[in-house]
Length: 339
Image (cartoon, rainbow, N blue to C red; front, side):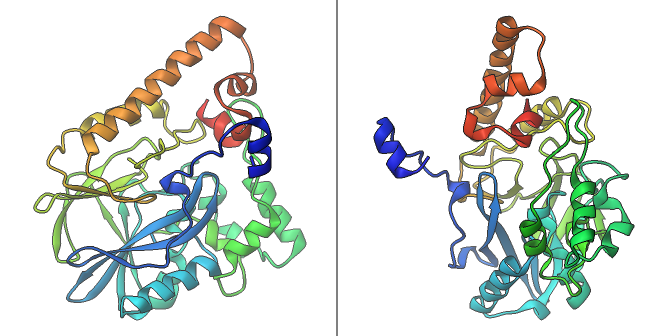
């Protein structure tokens, strides 16, 4: 809603959530050897992704190096230069989960600079192994070609479990995102193959610290968080965010993703000695247990609303329920998926 319409209706403009803020150009030192680099994102509800640079004697590891495309790549290059380093000093890319705003920059880091790619062992497309994200033939599509880009859009128009098709990204978005790759192919959208995989509770030496790898599925099946038990830092990815609730959708490969997410949040609350949460979107915060409880409460309230809606409208389509559960500005694939 724009300002004029807000004034006419007597409503105040919606406050911008932390996660929606545009990417800052400032490189922030969180602690010794931990730096936050914000990269631009243009996705529903998001204005940036936090890429964390973890420094050690061999260079840097990057956590979640952003979207594919020139905007993100050029921003990452500028942030690294401001930090006094560059791509040739990056030795590892850590990807918290299989969403393109977290792994999109990995392909070029690996192809051009031989960077290692570290993920949880379950890392794969959220839609399964038959998905476009796992299909090697898709990488042969030339996104500068009108016919090929429409083929990719058709591949991305996935059928939903409730009988519709997802709306694929626009031609403009696809070409923008693929622009970082030589030849403008569609590899940008594919889930990269990790060179290093870790298991839950495995200890990792990264950035001069010992981190505990935590497999906390829900937002995706493969979500990885990292916990430093000495200083209490918690790299949360999208598992826990400061002011919005992570999307829990019905399009992935988990039978009951919300139940899985609840279990992961309950486990998260066991880490009561966390001193600072470093999320993939928004600003660092220190109330991890309270925030996990807030997210659980939000979903419990939504479940109750679904029950009440069922009592009101009875048997109906997912879209009908979505329109009762979400405001019109939010209607679309993501809202239907979460319904």
